Image (cartoon, rainbow, N blue to C red; front, top):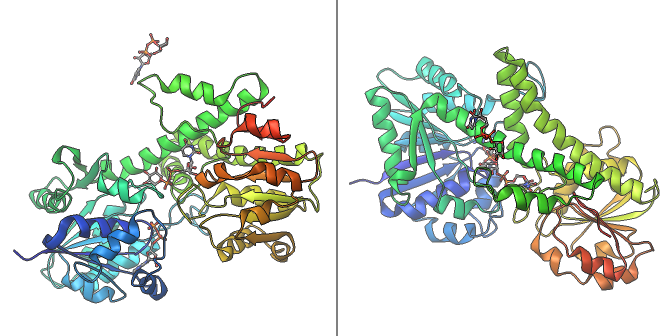
Length: 465
Ligand code: UDX
Ligand code: UDX
Ligand code: ADP
């Protein structure tokens, strides 16, 4: 039998790793072509330095590339050849017009639909992989039907991706579940089976859940909203802990033992980041408001408000501890990615903490093991409207953590990178003006040992005596 020909439009954080694992696990039963309009990105996927960092990804790509996995800018050719087409393009929050600040911008999805209609010469199964606003499948369907050549049929499926960055490959290799939503018609069910067969190469059948299209789309938004809500809930508790003698880690351990609550996603932090949580909640808020469900909208909006507040609260603590002035003081920022094991900075709490510290005139020395200096520069300039030059004046990015910490008034941990736990802080302490401050925005360091060395420590949700 000829291999299933799969095309994925969008070679980003979702499309790239997902298709690499589909190729690895599908073997000679599948041929996967990942296409993107961004030539630089495709060139990087075809080089030794992949455009994204994910543990284990290099090995998978090396094993499959050129055999049953291809990266190309030939969008039209890949569409023509494909049986299944994943749409895995970005859907950022709209920055202008109707729904500005909360609705998702589906212009990239729309342009994919138009390209698929234009280049298809036979029936196609079109799969939404990107997280999309509820009922985007309907938009796709209408555009495809209105533009397709005579006699060509399309089935639209929703197959949201639940991988988390930093663990993408292991999440893809053994997912908790694969969700496929489709139409209840016989053709819809046939399309669901065709996609299910691709996953069945490695995912046990009982982990493949099928639903109607709308449940599938909404489940993705709901999953991210519930996950983010847990972080805002524990972060809300962290503020109460700081004002009392309670310790948020102890509270998390105690409540996590309740099997109804579970132990995961209870790590208090400087705030959640990433490309999904805030965007998806705002998307849900927009949907609820547009359905006139304002109480529902307010409920979810509060998760984002709490997160913004948590970031601000952390930077305010730094400023207050440093005697209410950080102007011209060197503050070392350890970690700029939104979580460990990724170089991704989208919506990272570090951006907003640094923004606040720059507003106060602090000199920032930033170190992150994976984030490139140009990215940090871009992110900090994007939150410095009208005064981008301050980034050049106030910020230095270092490739050596000890150089970044040397002589700093304070060190702030903003990402939970494992290597931060291994540093020789006694050596760092000796170089710092006293009192030497350490702000642990992830609660990963050994606070008792650091205190012993002489550091003044502020952590999330606990008092360090
Ligand atoms: C609760 C806590 O579960 C328990 O740990 C604590 O010690 C006391 O408070 P209880 O109020 O007895 O216990 O019952 P619980 O099973 O938690 O249900 C509380 C309410 O939530 C009920 O009205 C129940 O019908 C409702 N509920 C529960 C739902 O509507 N949906 C659910 O999924 C679960
Ligand atoms: C998330 C979802 O987990 C994933 O299922 C979905 O497909 C995409 O969005 P991701 O954003 O990659 O994945 O990372 P995740 O591990 O969920 O972390 C998001 C943010 O929450 C990070 O900034 C992380 O540091 C923070 N976080 C997570 C906490 O602050 N505390 C926790 O307990 C867990
Ligand atoms: P995600 O995190 O959802 O994977 P990314 O921004 O990492 O999002 O990746 C989305 C990719 O989709 C980008 O590389 C972008 O160039 C690509 N893309 C957007 N629109 C189109 C399109 N119409 N055709 C092909 N690729 C597209």
